[in-house]
Image (cartoon, rainbow over all chains, first blue to last red; front, side):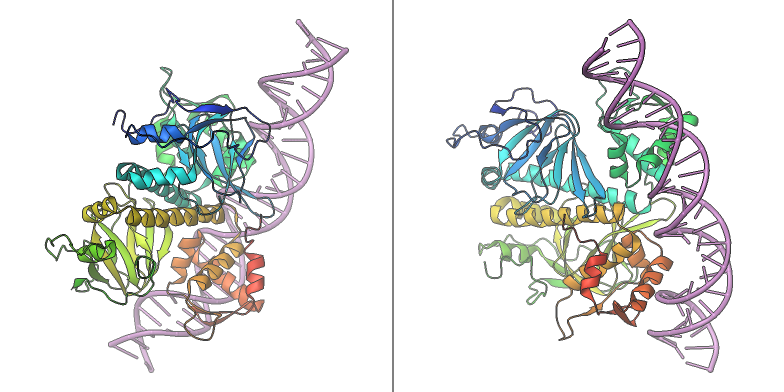
Length: 253
Length: 253
DNA sequence: CGTAACATTGAGGCACTTCAATGCGGGTGG
DNA sequence: CCACCCGCATTGAAGTGCCTCAATGTTACG
């Protein structure tokens, strides 16, 4: 029980897992560095999960896994930001989602991952062997239920993005994005309205289905309208959250 | 076991469920017409599911459930086509997905549905009380696993649509759509290349993030290029599937 | 056969893209 | 410590793909 089953915590306070894989440039395949462990006997599901967990560092702008890789692991982000990327043959890019601490990936896939995962910032992930992970889920309905809910939330969020990409204007998209980032930003400093964007304009553009130039122009426009302050390109102060909400066409329908 | 756990079959051969709700114009809330039933004792999960199932008819262009409704049921489509709809306050519409026989909806939601479900054609759905349904999943890991996989497939399909909506051109979208519909069309007649679209141009447009006029123009363009034949507005013969695949920019990446 | 809903086609406009140049910030080496 | 440089961001000008508005054609149905 404890803190509602370890998978929602944003800080990996006590990483019982070991064998942190050293950071590698362009590291792709996680190394299976921990051998077979005895099945836990203490009984709690969380402990069992930790038994099969393994910490892995992912350096900024390196690849955690590539599109088409065998889906051999489930990951949970514990630090940093990563991006889920899909490509068209000619190079057009779509960032399906950004992954932040507490987020999971690899729960739902079949034989191979249909996307790449790349680190936006230096990041740490908790890695679980997929087979073992699923076996644990099978053995504990509570755990299964918890991840069922996580996947449900992911699905809903993705559907919300369909609406954004299919029907919202560029301005609405950026407003939605900023509000979303603000929500996901824990209020660390007293300054509640400072949003630190870990990603580049290119990433924002590929996340919103726009071009770099359009995103940049929109930031400038919002600044001119006194809706935001661009402290630096990646440090945004939201002056008028109310206006952003109007602009985002939040679904009141 | 039988046929891999009833949830993938496209034809509801033996609807053990009863109490078909009479068709209603603009019927929205499903009526709880069957009282509490005793928990099944025969043991198999499929039978248990059937015990809590209830058939419901949904007339063409009526609403099965509305955005914001309490998420009290899980549904499986057994006949017909439905659409999952999200709206912006000003009326802009997004069709998140089309639901066809075998598809499920309501698995993943929280308290309320964040979308509406409307019937494109006359349809029949199997309805399960959500609480009971989840209890069954909890009690049977095999069943849980099966629906876990279903949700995973839904999620992957939705992510694929993100790519389509964010980065594909109008032509690529329509080509992808036609191929997708062709795949989902069971080869009933010998004519393998006839695709019967159950939905209007407006539905196609809202599914692809385009306007009716653009969709119509694209159909005409494909006809002019001898890629398809428009037997009727909703009966499309695919003459050159190879060209459609080229046009769709199928992810070979 | 008339009508209403849907689909098609055309003309013009605009939001976003593309192409191109300039600005800026952070790191490195002299 | 400063100059240089490289990558990213910004800004401008021109182009275009899709949308909007409008009219006509087609189908289904009474």
